[in-house]
Length: 237
Image (cartoon, rainbow, N blue to C red; front, top):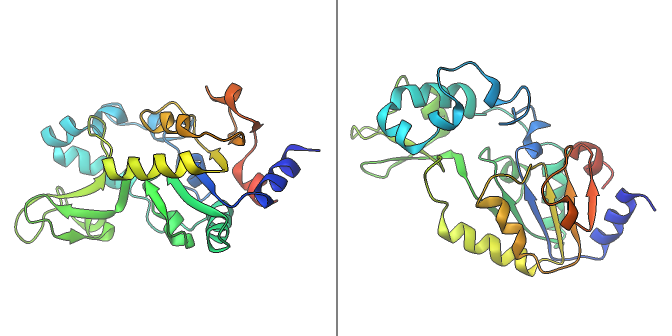
């Protein structure tokens, strides 16, 4: 029985599926991956991306931060792909209990998923650091220099920067969902970014599936490993 057939059978037998996804889920929508060869880490800026998208750099050089952010991290106008759509359908069918994502692009919600735990926040939510007013991603995209609210405060994306902690409520809900899952599908992530990667250790079941083009540190722990593109696998599901 080939691996995709095994996965199909497990999916049909499960009704508390949790999907844990990383950048590889969105690359097939055309959004560049952080660490791939043509991803953000190989672009030409004066500092490494980890430096630019750190909290201290944002505080120190907000104008530079927003230039990079607008150019490289504000993926607007992209459409959900087959993976996003299949997951939304599973949720509607009552098979999928949650999506836990490291992505900040909001494509899961765009595809129709309702229970999405965004570990690293979302570019679609932006708040004034002074008065708390909400601003759209388009507002940030179209503003010049440092985006400012009517009150004069800086409008900051609700995205977790390096040196910032993850939202505690989001982590707790993710842990609970993963702990209670009867099938955990981990896909499109190198599983090297913590604390996010460590969350899969809360899974207690015996159906841990890894789908990623390259090997990950968790391959040895998985019950099923597919080194394939997500589009190839999900188009068969």
